[in-house]
Length: 178
Image (tube, rainbow, N blue to C red):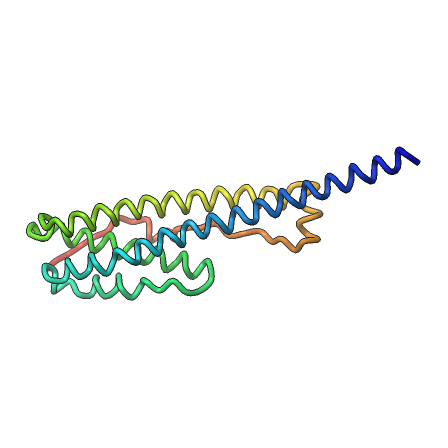
């Protein structure tokens, strides 16, 4: 009888530990996504300032500026927001490439500071995306591994999507000022 009680207690402790582990991984994924959101918000706050400074120098590049501002929307699902983030990244690269064509703009102290801030933010976004993907990888591995998969199925934990960049968004930015 004592052996049965010990076995039941060990099983209960194992289930509690597995449950806590899965909950912790799930929360880590949410936290990692919040880190991406935080950096995207920082970028979105910087972009209008960069656009305003650039407008005077690159007035005929208005389309690029408009696209940067339009892509700032942060609503929607995780995959929609990831897609919007990639659009903004491409447009920011276009904007910074346009600035290369204007020596006065490149020399403008405000523009240089904003460019440094934006470049640093882009690096932080890349790091946050990597952290998110690492968290998702650990979570997905945990919910697919035995015996976690049994508890994950009971808790209705589903596999999470990675933050992925579309193939056409990996190309170099081309700016033609004809």
